[in-house]
Image 1 (cartoon, rainbow, N blue to C red):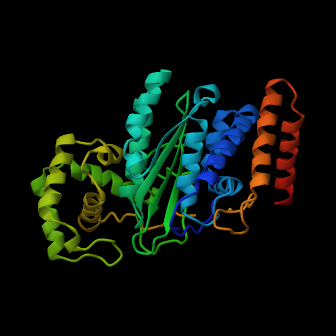
Image 2 (image 1 turned 60 degrees about the vertical axis):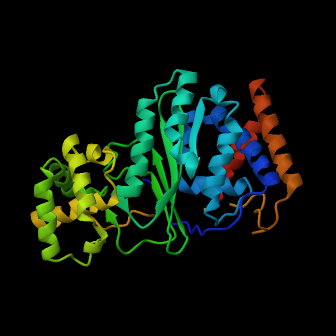
Image 3 (image 1 turned 45 degrees about the vertical axis):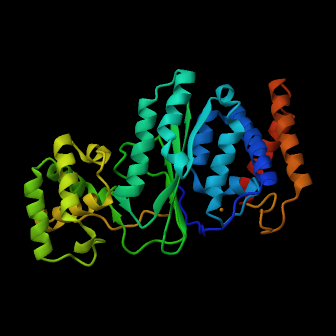
Length: 361
């Protein structure tokens, strides 16, 4: 059973001050060292894919509990914190915010060249998870952050975030390779949002299976026939429940993307989604044709479903205690070093504390 919940993530201006971010990189590195020693590197990915653990982790690092910036800053701190020890612990990170996210495939290639890992499957996972949350799941949040964490055996976790231009709230998407049977059918480990949206075109819902199948089939048809379908729809009606209007679609551009799909001849919806140039509007058009011509209605179900330790950068719930923060880093460093020497009492103490926390929570 997956734990699910809703986290409110408003946009906050500014960025993490240097004195805080530096400590976040140090503390995240030591915490992850402990986790790898105690539970193995795969468990790190499982924890990161849990939105509750990730949110609490950000709070432990001292960031704002309710800020959308927690996602980008925590991922950045982990990436910076472990870059010198990635080979040692077997955990690698690529991607980030804005333009850095676009360079994710190149970063994956560089890491794989140095380590001998296979890049193709990781790049596929990175690209397709982003394509799903930007195009196949149309919830009004545009992606601006994408980070992939992966291990030497190819296991991966993706954390990405989108922003609503309407109200400046964020939605965070968690992916974990373990357990994914399909990239295009209920693939998420979890989705964090401030609310459930009333209308979401959810082409990765289980209920959209027939729409996915017909959309892929339609994409293999000649573009002239598809455009004729669209023109028929324009003359008929557009149902209110569907998040599309005739003015949203430029027939000339739509025809060009139909040509790309036709040339690619995708065997299924996953291949259709991977075709370059196939975006939200093309998928909306195909799903609408599927509904009005073939009677297969897609899902409009929104799939969206927190710990203070050192304070927050803006003083909520209280100012960061630098002395306590630095002490935490030193305790964890010493615990890791002692564990390597065979002295595990402090590790055991941390474990007992974790068990106690589970009992009282």
